Image 1 (spheres, rainbow, N blue to C red):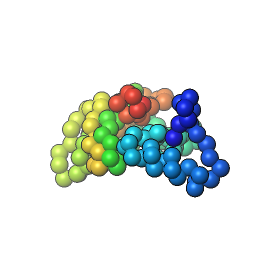
Image 2: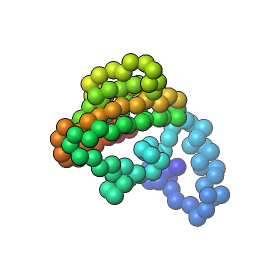
Image 3: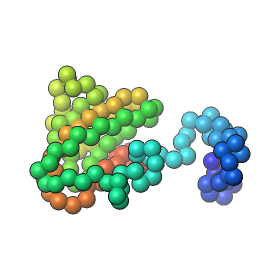
Length: 126
């Protein structure tokens, strides 16, 4: 929840925040959007490290919001947007679509060294 100036509020305890949290939840508008449950969960010391030529499997699940995963500096070599491996994958997608409530998967083989940012291409949430 935010105060009248648009700044995030802080509370002394969870109980003190309950009324404001419930009001924010009723609008179905999140106050924070993060990957892996917290800010910085996929950066710094928590970042995935891979060498050129290594293949990684990316699993993306979103409880109730549509998302458009995008790997800057790479792409999905094989992408299962609906997460079912029995279905044939799409190939070479830069961005793919995961509906709310679904999970998707992508395989990517790193072609070059460096940082590859993983984000939601719905840029207002990036």
